Length: 390
Image (tube, rainbow, N blue to C red; front, side):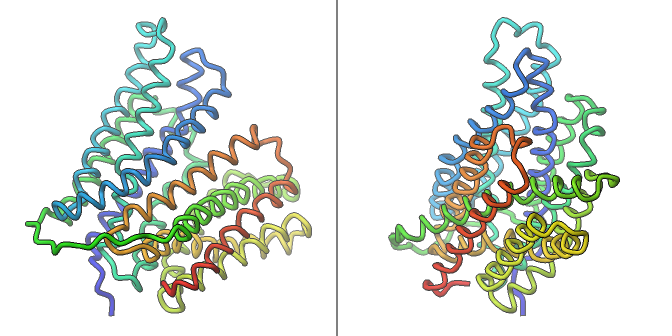
């Protein structure tokens, strides 16, 4: 019988969706804002790499600080509220600078500086917020609980291929304002479902964390990042080569939507048969799909590969955060999630830095390097079996 605090999980899922929406607006407008301010288009990629490099440090830092805050005052919400308010304020400031760019044209670093500050503000609360899932659900229920976060975030992500023109048509001030309002509303909803309580916490002993577990989470995050980045670069390229008559953007939106919807049954499967087992199967299936669509590029194999990705990719994304939380002591959940996010962000940043521009990467090379990522992630999951966690 499930004992998870489902109202809190829905509130946290709404916050995950708001975070995804805010990132969507930011990434859509980033190149346009920088070009309008006089920067070269390549600066957008470089800026994202810098922001990710900063997040590699900040994610585990604020995750650990939120753990300490919970031990002191029985809540992590201070970090969540602070980060959400800062992010919303900077989201309003970004288009304001754009509108009044002539006043700041003599100081070129103002816009990049604010953009970096925005990314840092996101790092303040993303890890503390997501790590709350460890407080809302028991160890065996975490994959199911996490599937709701995957669903909400995935639904927003699925809109990206078909929503860019719409978001650009809104204009930067309106788009960023909407994202800010949604983020603050989601934060308020989570506060409503998870009100403050009077601290009455027993003293907890300091528990050392095996270095191998830290390495496993970094490797897991890095591997999933490389594999995912390569996977979603390869699929549209293969579709264009084999089905030139189809609207690839629309097809990718449909695939992303289907992956998001598969999160819930994926969470149920992991809860029943074991999270690590589900992750292992998911990684193996996606790896086979990635290789088959490149080395056996027929309509049949491509269709089967896409079905495997739709059915099994969410098993990987659902399971990573629960595995991280269960590997560490219960009172170090924030640090665990932060280390995983640090590895994931490092993977995204390094992939973008090595393969820049990614459009020049051939499907074959993308599949090879993506396979390396998934093999690393699968190895980390396999090694984690020795710790008997689920």
